[in-house]
Picture 1 (cartoon, rainbow, N blue to C red):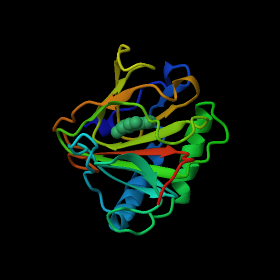
Picture 2 (cartoon, rainbow, N blue to C red):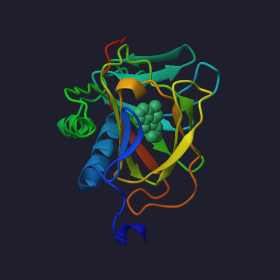
Picture 3 (cartoon, helix red, strand yellow):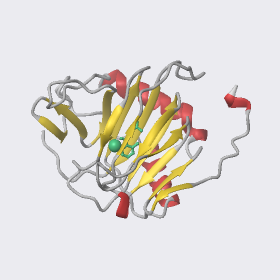
Picture 4 (cartoon, protein in one colour):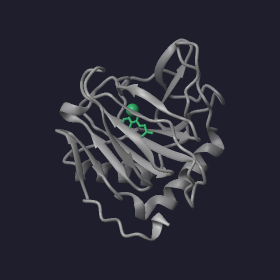
Length: 217
Ligand code: MD6
Ligand code: FE
């Protein structure tokens, strides 16, 4: 019963200059965040999006805020409307933006004003290949990520795809923040195993908060 063990990890783990894990940072708000995910998904359902290469994303995605990252056979972009429902994406819940700002602050980034939250849902076997977050049209603000439910193995590389990759386990309640010199570093998620979490069963959710400056309809 992992939940009954005290969390003895340090309150911050540096990955690189500008990148760190804040273990347990959002644990007190975890059930609230899971409820927010449910509410967003009721309007903008999770879906496995097509990729330009002809495949589909392994994780199911949705989001909220002024714009949300989408992919289809034509490429990646941020849209103001959900291509599935043709409605505007659900508004950013104030708690999400506040927690994002607090996590960024704890990591030394002041003035983070997230206007998009991407929600990822991982089932057993779901993964996210090594990638950079670089469709935002600006890099001055950090990315803040919250992990909920099942744990996952996070891969942390460097500025080049071929740089050595380290692994870190991200648990329910953990936040990761990166920006500054690490803002465009490669990272990914290894295929999820089959254990279960008391709150989410065999699923893992990830919320990434960003500031996006470049948006289409
Ligand atoms: C995930 N996250 O943790 C995938 N990107 O499920 C990301 O790709 C990610 O966690 C940018 C910043 C934080 C992240
Ligand atoms: Fe990413």
